[in-house]
Image (cartoon, rainbow, N blue to C red; front, side, top):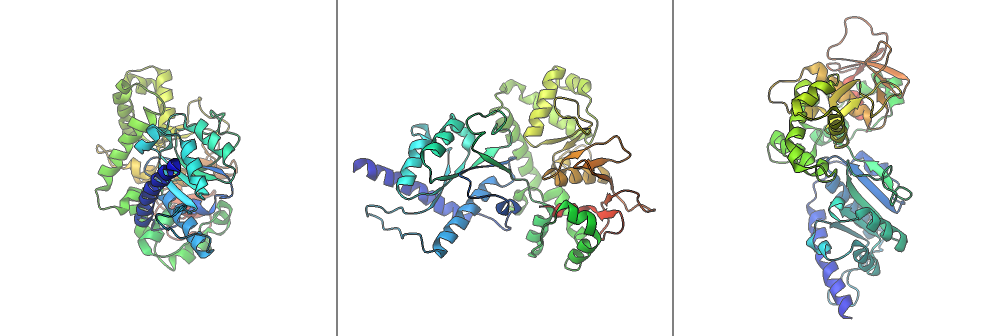
Length: 418
């Protein structure tokens, strides 16, 4: 009985944290990923770069579970002081809580399941020692428990993780799409479209959207400030993004990849070199000299920054890491604007947006053909800042175009893919 009371007190404390966070979570738009996940899977990883809203995503899912539970009249009311007061289906828990320095996640999950818990939503997973083995134990022991956990974009989940590879379903949460940003700014609801729909019907789709709002009135703001949810907060966006980028280097790269802290200045200098020059071809020798390390180490650092979602690497068709990429981009346009020594050219920003928007669900490569990009090995694309004076012979995404026509597609419309 004493152990049961301790478990109740412990869970009650976590539920108080849960209730406050869910009540105060800021979710101004339903994320597209919410409807792509098969929530019947018992172990789900939400993988994403720092700052894209993974915690808010978990809290939004918690609210949905509780709303569904209330609607179906399955939730039992809480009666403090009774034998079983915590009959609630869902609990959000952050593994940076000091409780987990002395107690196992397996035992915590067991206590939660014993009180009727069905959905455990876990944040800051990497801070728990042997997190993958412990998640595997929870999955195998508690057959009716559904676990959703956040994962840094650099955490090994499938290829290098024999504990989780057979059982985990991994989903990637990206920053806000232009569609999501536009919904937040206007209060209007817009559907997403497939690449095939945009290829065949971009003229009519862009016209339908433009009858409700002029997307170009918002596109420039999105490119500078719209990818990260922090634009919604009352703080300086650039300062907050700078802090986020430094945390990516100091935590997601150094700690998770187990790199010596003494190498942090080299990583910071590498980022600055990229901000100064991207999009660009990758000159490994010059970068190695600039950061004073070997070519092999420089290429590893480039890969880490790509995994951490600070860079995007564009490869020729049929090629991939560890081969040299054809071109390097900053991961999204907001980051591209973080260089204080130069203003990126519109063409560079538009190319960066194109790659970021398409890379979510599609394979994007450079090509030997006379085009800038090839998508899914079949759609050959150019990207232009201004509307061409003559008709394009291939699909061309145009930065300053509002309505599509012929082979000319408004670039902003590619922000409606998710």
